[in-house]
Amino acid sequence: MDGEAVVRRLEEARREGASRDELLRLAVHEIEAEEDHYDWVGIYLLDGPTLVLHDYVGKPTDHDRIPVGRGVCGTAVAEGRDLNIPDVHAIDNYLACSAETRSELVVLLREDEDAPVHGQIDMDSDRPSAFAARDEEEIRRVARWLAGLFGDGSRASS
Ligand code: SME
Image (cartoon, rainbow, N blue to C red):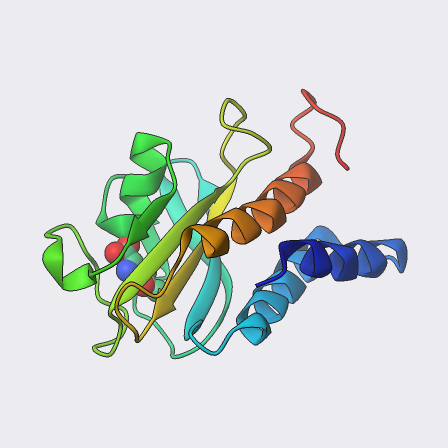
């Protein structure tokens, strides 16, 4: 997974006039295409106390609205941290999207650790322990760039 390459393609699309919505959709598709072990990739946006599914690649999910605090997705927001779950069957607070899913990575959309959270990139793999520290780092590059599109006023968007 090459986060810089994905960001370069997103920047090019932005220069060509893509809207924030279009860039979020493009990001999901670009990330999913990067690695075979990325079986489901989606972006949830925070709407008050609820995560709302914006776009995804993979099998349809029932979980298009997730309250903060529920599931892996809602827990990441409630605790203000990214979550890399090597074995989804080992945790209680897990919302199954697909029976095949074995591991999950959630990376918050924020410009840095102290910045407001706008949502998250959520990824599932059918392989156990699929997401390495390198995946996390590269996805974080994309997440930070996407967070800049929300222009909370405290930082210049890059
Ligand atoms: N597994 C997530 C729900 C979202 S689906 O994986 C698409 C969770 O536990 O929050």
